[in-house]
Image 1 (cartoon, rainbow, N blue to C red):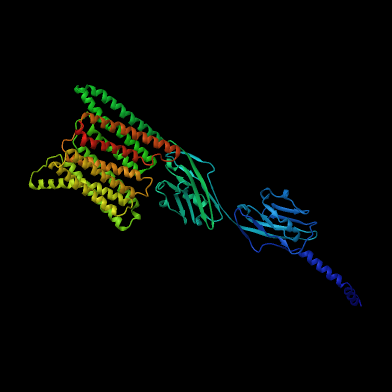
Image 2: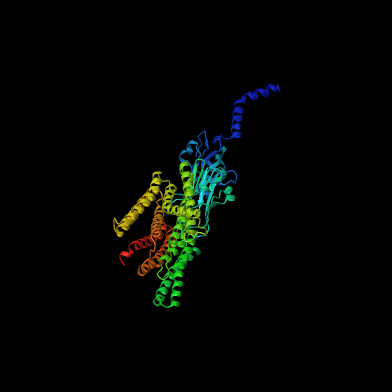
Length: 625
């Protein structure tokens, strides 16, 4: 009976029990808050939406939504009392984290996070509180795809010759060893300074101007430090440098500026040497002029000769040192070698025209010609070696053969110069035959060498092969025409003046042809073509005077002509070149750009004028005496 009563009582209250059970289940489970299916990935600096929503509509009254960092409980954003409470946000998220307030009534509590930062990586909890229920979901920002490149915030000032570091720091989710490429470029000239690719640095890819002067800090690369060390700063290094990084689909860059270049100790020494050379040239000339008034006095004559030798050597040696220092500081190899070699040779021609020194034989001019041949060949061959890798097999063979022939001919010509003024130690028929053949070969060498230089010049700058044949035809034509003109003179078909005029006119035409081919050859060498051409002109002018002087005995100038030429060569040329070097260095230091472009333009042009003036006076001076 008791059991029946209890059953009847339970049956009567069954609906109420079911309703209570359902309510207890809802209360126990709470509302369901939905989030993303997996971690979020977004690029650095972008906007990302952190999903959070419910299926049912919740009353706004009593609704509270919190977004917090799971790891630190930092409040990212809060929605309460029907509005977003931005004043409650942690400072790092103000103006960056926003609700979609117009969609909250529909159950969308997602958060938009703008300007994503690297430190935003982590877990976020979205908690929804209704009047009776609550629920939450967790959202994870797993990877922030970032590539931040930072450089120097200020321009860098440095003195020429010093070392400088251009900063480049990389912050990325990709490890540095997986970067595809990091490159440093000089943006104002679009020059590649240094390249890092596939976890290796490639210093050989650097522009010639920066080769062996730039490097990464290898030990710092795993830390994302790709700063550039630039050694022995030069004036042309002034400008804007860009560090550009490529990683995955991302790329970023930073710039550094070398703003001001100060004069280094080497520059100051160059200025001092230029001023000293100019001053010594003027001072010694004044002393020679004053002493020459007492030329009948043997002691005075001895002093004048001593001053004359000193005047021929001292200013030129000082200028030689100035060019060496300038070349070491600025690094213009071909330009420096050419100018320095010229100043070593200049005293030979100055002594030849010195008015108060004993007249030298043509050995001085022949020696200068030989030295110029050797230096000029070495410079051109060095240039050819630097670009040989870009040539085909035929041009490479031509370079090697031409250089080898020039070396062999230079050795033979040098032997001839050493033995020309000496008597043979044995007087047999064999010795006389050898000497005769050596004389013939030396004469042929004197004519053929300049053409071989032009040939080598064509090949070194990648000229068309047709230019090689022109360079070979030139001395042959000159050789034939020269002896035809001599024969005409001997046969008295024309006057001596007409014969000389025809000869020098023909040689000038040949020189113009050579220069024209040089210009066409070096069309791609806009910055340095003029320097090479001026050097070639001087070499051709020196060749002309050496040949003419060797083919005519007892050539000499009057005292007046000697004074004019000596003043031009010992004072005018030195002052002009010293002024050009100082101006070039100062303007380049201030502006970061070269004023002249190539000092060989000034140096060899002035020397060519001096040489051609000597040639013209030797040929026609007798006509105006």
